[in-house]
Image 1 (cartoon, rainbow, N blue to C red):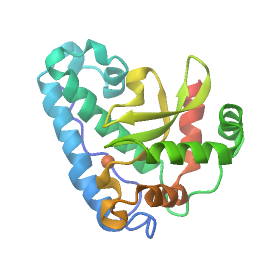
Image 2: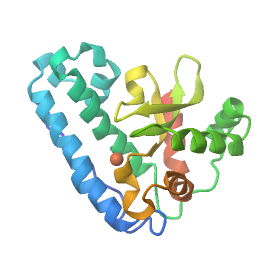
Image 3: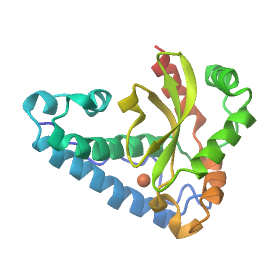
Length: 207
Ligand SMILES: [Fe+2]
Protein backbone atom coordinates (compact mmCIF):
# COMPACT_ATOMS: atom_id res chain seq x y z
CA UNK A 1 0.00 0.00 0.00
CA UNK A 2 1.18 3.48 -0.86
CA UNK A 3 2.09 5.44 2.27
CA UNK A 4 1.84 9.19 2.05
CA UNK A 5 4.52 11.42 3.55
CA UNK A 6 4.17 14.97 4.79
CA UNK A 7 4.45 17.19 1.70
CA UNK A 8 7.09 19.93 1.98
CA UNK A 9 6.56 23.65 2.40
CA UNK A 10 8.65 25.17 -0.45
CA UNK A 11 10.03 28.08 1.67
CA UNK A 12 11.10 28.63 5.26
CA UNK A 13 8.48 28.94 8.00
CA UNK A 14 9.33 32.63 8.50
CA UNK A 15 9.23 33.46 4.79
CA UNK A 16 5.64 34.74 4.85
CA UNK A 17 6.22 37.13 7.75
CA UNK A 18 4.73 39.52 8.70
CA UNK A 19 1.52 38.32 7.01
CA UNK A 20 1.65 34.76 8.34
CA UNK A 21 3.91 34.22 11.33
CA UNK A 22 6.60 31.55 11.54
CA UNK A 23 5.19 29.81 14.62
CA UNK A 24 1.78 29.38 12.97
CA UNK A 25 3.42 28.02 9.81
CA UNK A 26 5.56 25.56 11.77
CA UNK A 27 2.69 24.19 13.87
CA UNK A 28 0.33 24.17 10.90
CA UNK A 29 2.76 22.10 8.85
CA UNK A 30 4.50 19.85 11.38
CA UNK A 31 1.47 19.16 13.58
CA UNK A 32 -1.77 19.68 11.65
CA UNK A 33 -0.70 18.65 8.15
CA UNK A 34 1.30 15.76 9.62
CA UNK A 35 -1.79 14.53 11.46
CA UNK A 36 -3.96 14.60 8.32
CA UNK A 37 -1.23 12.66 6.52
CA UNK A 38 -0.91 10.04 9.28
CA UNK A 39 -4.66 9.62 9.58
CA UNK A 40 -5.06 9.32 5.81
CA UNK A 41 -2.56 6.45 5.88
CA UNK A 42 -4.35 4.86 8.84
CA UNK A 43 -7.72 5.05 7.07
CA UNK A 44 -6.28 3.65 3.83
CA UNK A 45 -4.89 0.68 5.76
CA UNK A 46 -8.48 -0.24 6.62
CA UNK A 47 -9.66 0.07 3.00
CA UNK A 48 -9.82 -2.77 0.46
CA UNK A 49 -6.92 -3.14 -2.02
CA UNK A 50 -8.88 -1.64 -4.92
CA UNK A 51 -9.04 1.65 -2.98
CA UNK A 52 -5.50 1.43 -1.60
CA UNK A 53 -3.96 1.17 -5.04
CA UNK A 54 -5.55 4.41 -6.24
CA UNK A 55 -4.01 7.85 -5.91
CA UNK A 56 -5.55 10.08 -3.24
CA UNK A 57 -6.79 12.51 -5.91
CA UNK A 58 -8.66 9.72 -7.65
CA UNK A 59 -10.10 8.57 -4.32
CA UNK A 60 -11.30 12.07 -3.43
CA UNK A 61 -12.83 12.49 -6.87
CA UNK A 62 -14.76 9.23 -6.36
CA UNK A 63 -15.40 9.44 -2.63
CA UNK A 64 -18.64 7.50 -3.02
CA UNK A 65 -16.61 4.37 -3.81
CA UNK A 66 -14.92 4.37 -0.39
CA UNK A 67 -16.50 1.87 2.04
CA UNK A 68 -18.92 3.53 4.44
CA UNK A 69 -16.83 2.83 7.53
CA UNK A 70 -13.82 4.75 6.14
CA UNK A 71 -15.57 7.31 3.96
CA UNK A 72 -15.71 10.03 6.61
CA UNK A 73 -12.06 9.54 7.60
CA UNK A 74 -10.83 9.59 3.99
CA UNK A 75 -12.98 12.61 3.16
CA UNK A 76 -11.59 14.53 6.13
CA UNK A 77 -7.96 13.40 6.24
CA UNK A 78 -7.47 12.89 2.52
CA UNK A 79 -8.95 16.34 2.00
CA UNK A 80 -6.71 17.78 4.72
CA UNK A 81 -3.67 16.12 3.15
CA UNK A 82 -4.39 17.50 -0.34
CA UNK A 83 -5.79 20.90 0.67
CA UNK A 84 -2.69 21.80 2.68
CA UNK A 85 -0.36 20.50 -0.03
CA UNK A 86 -2.05 22.99 -2.37
CA UNK A 87 -2.17 25.74 0.27
CA UNK A 88 1.63 25.84 0.84
CA UNK A 89 2.22 26.16 -2.89
CA UNK A 90 -0.59 28.69 -3.30
CA UNK A 91 1.53 31.05 -1.19
CA UNK A 92 5.00 32.52 -1.56
CA UNK A 93 7.10 35.32 -0.09
CA UNK A 94 6.53 38.63 -1.89
CA UNK A 95 3.39 37.29 -3.50
CA UNK A 96 0.11 39.04 -3.97
CA UNK A 97 -0.85 41.50 -6.66
CA UNK A 98 -3.09 40.49 -9.51
CA UNK A 99 -2.85 37.57 -11.91
CA UNK A 100 -2.36 37.97 -15.65
CA UNK A 101 -3.00 35.80 -18.66
CA UNK A 102 -5.75 33.24 -19.02
CA UNK A 103 -6.63 32.98 -15.31
CA UNK A 104 -7.18 36.75 -15.20
CA UNK A 105 -9.50 36.47 -18.21
CA UNK A 106 -11.41 33.61 -16.52
CA UNK A 107 -11.79 35.61 -13.30
CA UNK A 108 -13.08 38.62 -15.23
CA UNK A 109 -15.57 36.44 -17.11
CA UNK A 110 -16.94 34.86 -13.93
CA UNK A 111 -16.79 37.74 -11.47
CA UNK A 112 -16.74 40.90 -13.60
CA UNK A 113 -13.34 42.11 -12.42
CA UNK A 114 -10.46 41.12 -10.18
CA UNK A 115 -11.62 43.50 -7.45
CA UNK A 116 -15.13 42.01 -7.50
CA UNK A 117 -13.64 38.51 -7.26
CA UNK A 118 -11.42 39.53 -4.36
CA UNK A 119 -14.33 41.13 -2.52
CA UNK A 120 -16.57 38.10 -2.98
CA UNK A 121 -13.81 35.66 -2.00
CA UNK A 122 -12.88 37.68 1.10
CA UNK A 123 -16.35 38.43 2.38
CA UNK A 124 -17.76 34.94 1.79
CA UNK A 125 -14.73 33.16 3.21
CA UNK A 126 -14.79 35.38 6.30
CA UNK A 127 -18.37 34.24 6.97
CA UNK A 128 -17.74 30.48 6.78
CA UNK A 129 -19.26 29.07 9.95
CA UNK A 130 -16.75 27.14 12.02
CA UNK A 131 -13.83 25.58 10.14
CA UNK A 132 -13.43 25.40 6.40
CA UNK A 133 -11.84 26.75 3.26
CA UNK A 134 -12.61 29.37 0.64
CA UNK A 135 -11.69 28.25 -2.88
CA UNK A 136 -11.35 29.54 -6.38
CA UNK A 137 -12.11 26.40 -8.37
CA UNK A 138 -12.32 25.39 -12.01
CA UNK A 139 -15.59 23.71 -12.92
CA UNK A 140 -15.01 21.29 -15.83
CA UNK A 141 -18.76 21.21 -16.57
CA UNK A 142 -19.19 24.96 -17.10
CA UNK A 143 -15.53 25.46 -18.12
CA UNK A 144 -15.48 28.48 -15.82
CA UNK A 145 -13.85 29.44 -12.55
CA UNK A 146 -16.15 29.72 -9.55
CA UNK A 147 -16.00 30.60 -5.87
CA UNK A 148 -16.75 27.69 -3.57
CA UNK A 149 -16.63 27.48 0.21
CA UNK A 150 -16.12 24.00 1.64
CA UNK A 151 -16.73 22.85 5.23
CA UNK A 152 -14.01 21.34 7.42
CA UNK A 153 -11.46 19.55 5.17
CA UNK A 154 -13.83 18.41 2.43
CA UNK A 155 -12.00 18.75 -0.87
CA UNK A 156 -13.62 20.55 -3.83
CA UNK A 157 -12.58 17.43 -5.78
CA UNK A 158 -15.38 15.51 -4.05
CA UNK A 159 -17.80 17.72 -6.01
CA UNK A 160 -15.97 17.37 -9.31
CA UNK A 161 -14.30 20.77 -8.96
CA UNK A 162 -10.58 21.43 -9.44
CA UNK A 163 -8.89 23.50 -6.70
CA UNK A 164 -7.04 26.53 -8.05
CA UNK A 165 -6.54 28.81 -5.03
CA UNK A 166 -7.54 28.05 -1.45
CA UNK A 167 -7.59 29.98 1.79
CA UNK A 168 -7.59 27.91 4.98
CA UNK A 169 -9.79 29.60 7.57
CA UNK A 170 -9.48 27.04 10.34
CA UNK A 171 -8.47 28.92 13.47
CA UNK A 172 -5.17 26.97 13.46
CA UNK A 173 -4.26 28.95 10.32
CA UNK A 174 -4.36 32.35 11.99
CA UNK A 175 -5.31 32.35 15.69
CA UNK A 176 -1.83 32.93 17.19
CA UNK A 177 -1.41 36.20 15.29
CA UNK A 178 -4.94 37.32 14.49
CA UNK A 179 -7.04 35.70 17.27
CA UNK A 180 -10.72 36.19 16.36
CA UNK A 181 -10.00 38.65 13.54
CA UNK A 182 -10.43 36.31 10.59
CA UNK A 183 -11.05 39.17 8.09
CA UNK A 184 -7.65 40.68 9.01
CA UNK A 185 -5.97 37.34 8.32
CA UNK A 186 -7.70 37.07 4.94
CA UNK A 187 -6.62 40.61 4.03
CA UNK A 188 -3.03 39.75 4.92
CA UNK A 189 -3.20 36.43 3.05
CA UNK A 190 -3.75 38.22 -0.27
CA UNK A 191 -0.20 39.61 0.13
CA UNK A 192 1.31 36.12 -0.06
CA UNK A 193 -0.87 34.60 -2.81
CA UNK A 194 1.24 32.86 -5.44
CA UNK A 195 -0.63 33.68 -8.64
CA UNK A 196 1.91 31.75 -10.74
CA UNK A 197 0.94 28.59 -8.89
CA UNK A 198 -2.79 29.32 -9.19
CA UNK A 199 -2.37 30.04 -12.91
CA UNK A 200 -0.56 26.76 -13.49
CA UNK A 201 -3.30 24.82 -11.65
CA UNK A 202 -5.91 26.60 -13.77
CA UNK A 203 -4.08 25.92 -17.02
CA UNK A 204 -3.64 22.25 -16.10
CA UNK A 205 -7.30 21.90 -15.10
CA UNK A 206 -8.45 23.26 -18.46
CA UNK A 207 -6.54 20.64 -20.46
FE1 LIG B 1 -5.05 24.05 8.07
